[in-house]
Image (cartoon, rainbow, N blue to C red):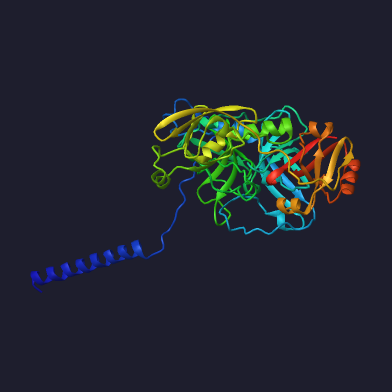
Length: 494
């Protein structure tokens, strides 16, 4: 065999060997199951000093970027309570179309249409002696209200008062030295600032979420079905809230209470990206009124208003593109007396800028009858300032004739309503306070109040009223309504 032939054979053999090795490598790399090995075991140290030795180089500290919510959370969580409203078996309420308005309350359950049960919400301690702010819809029609504190202590709460037009309520528990939140100035809240929501969503107690203020002065027509005098000027945020957050706190980064979480916009019933809170400026005034008078005493300008937009400005030749347009003036109230006319555009109240009709409602709602406000308005291109006295809406219900007579019970006089009054007020039972005596006046009740319920008992007649008053304990709760369906609730010593 020639040398050339031997070389070719050897070369072929080497090529075959290399090809085989390559095939094995490719197979083991891509097809064969890999084998795993433990890392060599490290001898466990007798102490952990080696991990804290100063001689060991430490990672340099990194400055935290973005907002820090720790301080606000430590202040707010102990001051936010869990509210449990219990309902006994009763006549079913009017069925509501749950999906007709995406801006609605967010209970864990809607208990109005079931014979018995419990609803869950949140509240905020606003004083060390046990006053709690919450939403009216959290405790509305409840037979018993329980407040559970951050430390799991539980108390039965008294309902001091409620206000349907703002969806707020004031409760009281008997305890002292409680953690509480201080009201902040919601006028100073800016779109884009960080905020934190604290509440009990879906019974997950003391839950904290954060977001920014998305908008101010939002009117979402949430409360209009319950009160024709509803006041809506919500703070809109993207802090996540859900069922059970109702009545909880919206706080700024310093832990100041700037709003009461009230509603979400959702077609599923769960958080969909934005939520709404009642500004602290409204909540504080309502709480003060409920504590002092047992009802909200609200002064009115006496104007019908609508927001200014491009179409309205064009049709009415307006020189401004913001504010509240006066579409009508009540001749019996303060705006007319001060000289405000139909067609004026209100742009500020007491120096606070007004961008839309909701903001005007918010500003005026913090004053009482008898107060005066400084209103700046445009009439064409001219700015005019008015000093407007605020007045209450027409007092008691007017009756053509009092043929049914009045019955005096414990210093107050009462009478039945006429069929026309029942129809106009859209109620089927109740007795009117013809003249409030000393006890009722001290409790905040005014002439013309129609009592529909006392301590949970429906009042159908004068006899029902007298029996309920005689059976009542030292502390009594009366529910009913005033002129034009303004609902109120009073709790006082009897």
